[in-house]
Length: 241
Image 1 (tube, one colour):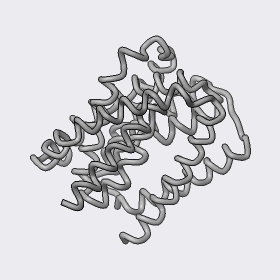
Image 2 (spheres, rainbow, N blue to C red):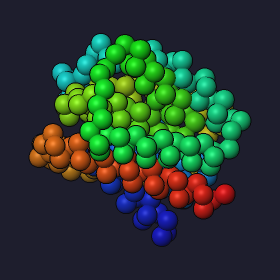
Image 3 (spheres, rainbow, N blue to C red):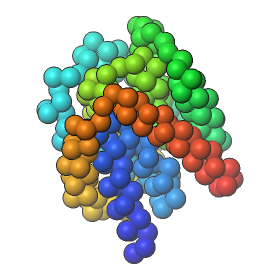
Image 4 (cartoon, rainbow, N blue to C red):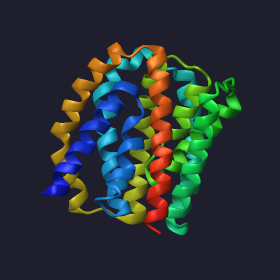
């Protein structure tokens, strides 16, 4: 029962972040869900609930989607997905999380130091590929997108809308792939079902917060979220070895 309340709290906070920023759910939820569920259950619950959030929001924000960028992200992710499957099946997840956490912390520091870069076609495809790889392997497509949008100084409306639209594709493909690679069970679907009302409460609160987040606050919040995720992933990976 204690774990159930912790689970509900995680989902509520992650849903609020996902709605208000476009990327918070998987970044926040996955590391904490791994403390309650075994890896494939945590990843699939994250994917299912993230897909529900994206479906619920997409019609409301579709006018802000950068369709040209979205197409390149999707094509790039198709290349990254098979590599993510190989990582999931063959590489120790704890080791992989350590590598990801270190990369996150380094890139967050660069962003705080105001290091910026331009969006290019090649980089668009690379970011899509990395997001596809990370979705299959650890259920976290957000960090590459978050870093890319922050580094290119993308406006928050474009960031949120394009990210959520991309999630519709990548999470659906990832869920099918996860079920094929690792199977699924009733714990995953029952836990996801229990969380749906909480997700929709988070959607409402997140929408209100989004309206009151200016661009500077949005950017600062991005740095905090990236940094905290990197630190948590690093500590969790080291302590679980």
